[in-house]
Image (cartoon, rainbow, N blue to C red; front, side, top):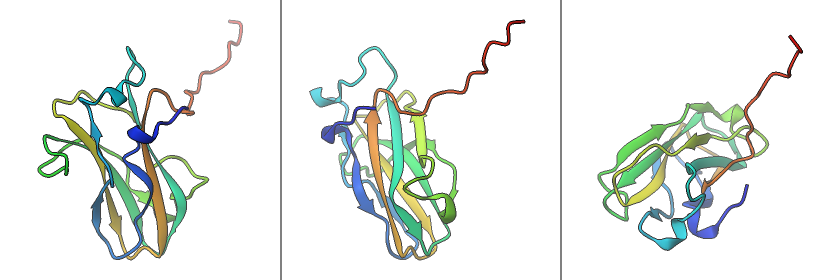
Length: 143
């Protein structure tokens, strides 16, 4: 997986504190030439925990689109699973790893919803052409 600083809405963004809904520090402007990743291929949204979460109950990620750079009045493009704090670790599976659905607005970003008071936890979000997660394919049994 190749990442690009201009396609990273969150870079080690802390989600520490009381239960809250937080938007990504940055947004991706789809009219910018810097978003030309994976030409001819679907782009993916990847969100990972870069600091293990502690103290709260869960975290959930949403992929947003908006006509405004501050992500005000957003439309939700995709909602990730609610991930228990015990599974939201830097060594654990991604919080979101999806192909970005068709969108019609200029800006995309993320919203993080935490439940409970987080004592630790940070995320990084990326827009990439491919992720390291490979599909499972059974081997050929010869039949």
